[in-house]
Image (tube, rainbow, N blue to C red; front, top):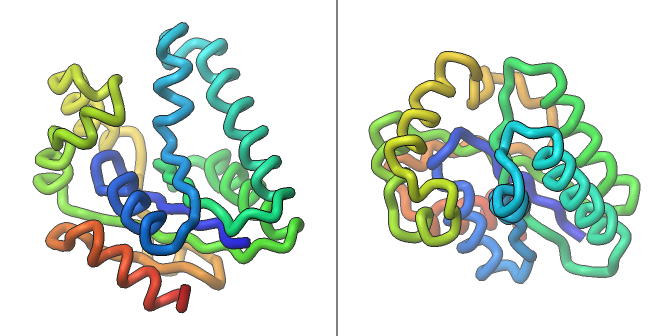
Length: 186
């Protein structure tokens, strides 16, 4: 089994790269908004109820997948590198899969802000992520997050054997997926 964590800031292309990688490898894609959008049908994102739904669904899905005989999965996640709790979450997630015999991989995507602002408005993003359809709010969240969070790592900061960082500012999702497949020899 393989577990691929695709991380990077909002609108960097995690979901579209994940879709292409899933298509090319047969791994299942679980993009982070699948649980976010479900919770938002009932509660505001910042509420304890929404966070409970998001984290409970994810935890159960990860546990079930890790213990299954499936080929594996891809998970997309915005990792705030300036928060220790985020490191603990990623460590626990990777450990869950590793203790069940899975090979784990981290792919970090980066793109310049202008590219991310453009990608924040793509039809596929708006189709898959209802909460992003308020484009002004989504734009403001994307820009304001830079004041509070560091959403890409510093060189050498991610200590994982199977790690790849890609600047995908000028790459198609298919080209990024091909690069991941080639680098990790999937």
